[in-house]
Image 1 (cartoon, rainbow, N blue to C red):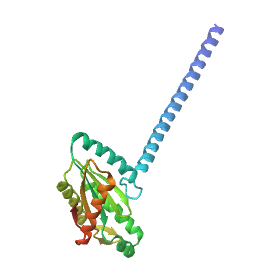
Image 2 (cartoon, rainbow, N blue to C red):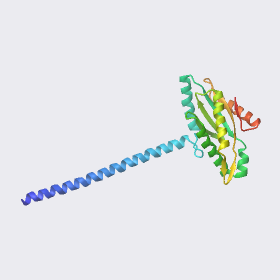
Image 3 (cartoon, rainbow, N blue to C red):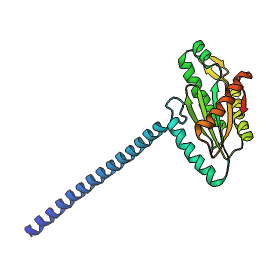
Image 4 (spheres, rainbow, N blue to C red):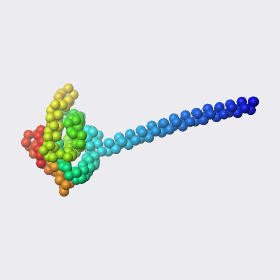
Length: 210
């Protein structure tokens, strides 16, 4: 009887230890899963930063090149048109000189935010450099592309930029062109650039088709 009682106590103790061990294993497994998820999110964040401009959240040149390659291939497969627009903030140097570089950065952020709300889901906004932005407009003919960019301009007039307590109207000039299958991005952006500078010479805050 004493041996049986001792054996029962030993079994109970072993079971208790096994339960504790299983609980510890489950806790470690749960922690490992949390670490894996954290690593996944961190990798996604790093990937986003690698393809996005840190100041405005728009695509950077790398992200734009990836989007351009994807949309060019899609346009060729489906036989649709691909347009692009080059935007340049008007009087950006004067804004920096008058309100400071922090205000200039905030103005770029404001433009990107307004543009994202005004553009269509299939459009892509990229910061091309300095105060210049590129918009990729898939499955869009040039006339419709001009109207999309003008919609961004109208939104900027209704959502004024705030610098401290001051309301500041920021505008941009833009050139729009259609990409052709036999040309590269540099050739298309050159045409858009020429149209954009023509818009500047015509009085700014305009969108012209190349």
